[in-house]
Image (cartoon, rainbow, N blue to C red; front, side):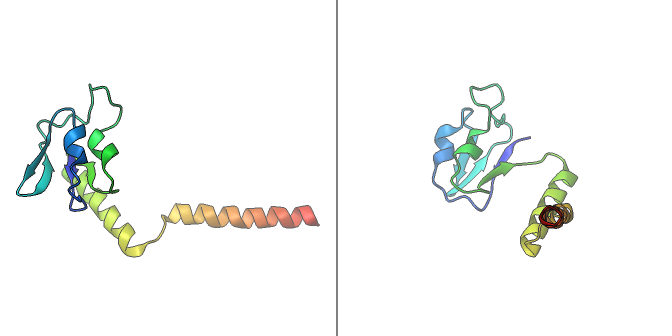
Length: 111
């Protein structure tokens, strides 16, 4: 799976200097990653992809799923998360349950 540069890129050029395979290109002022050259830094001295590690933005350089449906669900979940600004159902359930259990435990201890 190669990485891709998104519209969040601020064109700081950090990724150009850190990519060990020179997979990052600039065309018409836009940065992009050549998927045929990108190795995710596997087989290099780095344990994480350097484009993502050096990017000052959170979503400037992200993994590009190779499977269509994986890409579709990743995009869908990201957009729904931004639109709803809500936690996952199970996260909310755990937080609520933990809070109520803690309150019950404190009440029991004080009685």
